[in-house]
Image 1: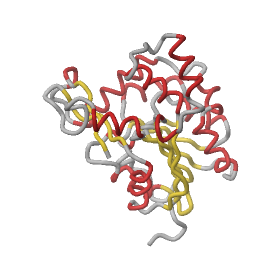
Image 2 (image 1 turned 180 degrees about the vertical axis):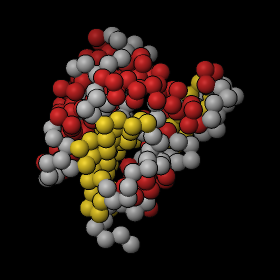
Image 3 (image 1 turned 90 degrees about the vertical axis):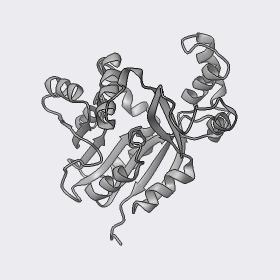
Length: 267
């Protein structure tokens, strides 16, 4: 596991939970609303992976989105007849979501300690959240196992420590990874496939699959960071679109997605 750092000038002096809340509140404010985003959920690769599991669930099954952000996944699954709860650490974001979607359940919470009853959830998913605590993924995984019913499924994504990122860590500038400089603070963990599988297995889960995701986004980032091409250029986006299908995921994929299951009988 590798650490990614972030410039901390705007967040100096904040304890980790306060930093995480403030940082993501600002991210969601910049992104604005979810207008149009709900309809796009079924086109996302995460949704395609989840679909067979969702189709096997009874109507009204309990689903939790840990770190729901702007709530588009929660609204989408609610429209499909599931009993969905979105949890996010950003109080401002959750307040806006409750006002805009009064018939959808959103709560302020820390996914390391949700307060939900044990064995009360059929499916728990969390996109790019477990990695944002410097103590590691352990408490997030423990809480996911606790609230899932035996046989319930966990779907998560985390940043992928792919070959490109590993080479950058080995040959990049000092301070890019590892210990924070004075102007940096911890942002996230980046994991290999083996590391993510091991974390989940040690946490008591049966790991069904760990797969690279979002090659095009990873290719776009590579073209920007290694070759200096601006994100907004049509050339950059065209190259990312053309190269992503032929470059192996282990080289350039931006995220890892894991599918895991709480065993029917623990222990």
